[in-house]
Length: 117
Image 1 (cartoon, rainbow, N blue to C red):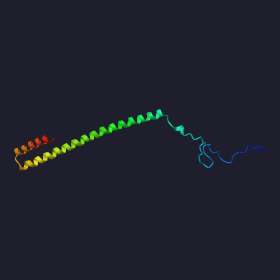
Image 2 (image 1 turned 60 degrees about the horizontal axis):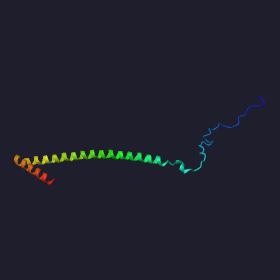
Image 3 (image 1 turned 135 degrees about the horizontal axis):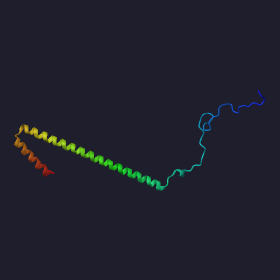
Image 4 (image 1 turned 120 degrees about the vertical axis):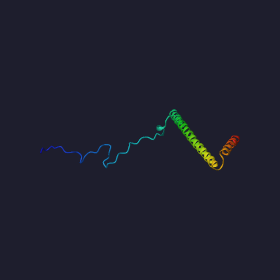
């Protein structure tokens, strides 16, 4: 071997600059604390608020439509049940009474109902 040989300068493999020797990431370089740096201008905040208010109004409108449709379904169901109960009541009455008397009672109840409401 020649007298002048090249020797390696480090004892092991070099770590990437983003990782310390012990494997942990380095701390971020410190910067000055500027709390106003993240604040948004009033115009941007106002625009965001108006957009949010418009979205909420639209959602409330959709919810109101949905609730109206639900109430209509419930009212129709209650009306159907009331008609069925009245029909069954008259059928039960017809078992014991004559047909004409049942019709007379039905007409009289219809008049009473019209007077009450």
